[in-house]
Image (tube, rainbow over all chains, first blue to last red; front, side):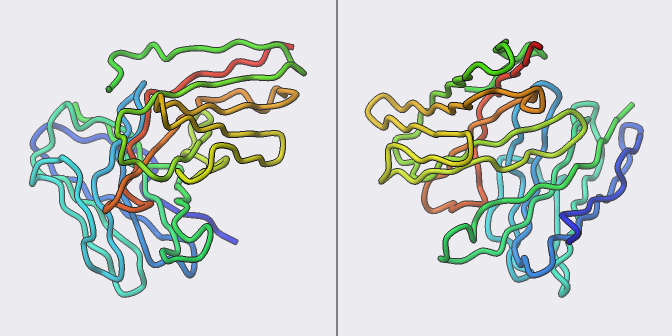
Length: 116
Length: 114
């Protein structure tokens, strides 16, 4: 079975540009979450989407936005890129629900964004 | 709190020894805790989880201990192998965020020496 897939794996942008990152969850997973991981630190929560609706937002500026599509895939958009946005952007999916293990997050390998 | 810089705490163990990785958390409302392993170039991989109504949970070669009184979590790895070398993160979540809004710790680099 395919795990969580993310694209692109690496990309380089310059300050002020815009970036779109894409994520395909595990088949059957309806919840997608996005995390930012700066080098040397743990991941930080950005967004959660479930059934195409935003269910949670972390402490990130409005330059960050996301959406989820009917097939449960998701996009993370970042506008007006800053040097500090350089990080590994992780997508994670889960089934979501009350059964045991339903909320365990499975992470993709991430998209490595470098802002110059 | 958040870590700064690139210098993760490091634990070096000999192959075959047991490893203990510790984590302190600050939110007394946290009710679900997870340990993740992250190898270079990969996303975090789930190892084991525990709910706040438990103080110990065992998996294959791993045990998680939770001490809510002092807000401390530990991961024990038995008979550590070279493939266990990675960065280990504890993560927590509290209502109403649920299991998706995780707060990750700083991370500990585990190095297994042959």
